[in-house]
Length: 73
Image (tube, rainbow, N blue to C red):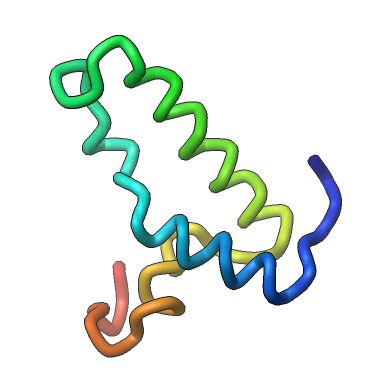
């Protein structure tokens, strides 16, 4: 998927991504046999964000600036 999303779809994807678990939180203990599928889904969303010029590490700050730290670095 190399096509860019329209602004509304991109904003919706950013909001959804902000509620997804972080890859480090996805374990076989928590997700059972589906853990690899969940990791694959997270990676797919990250790739689409990158294609659209969005840094996945900065999405939380974009979506929720009032509850996010000033920097993740």
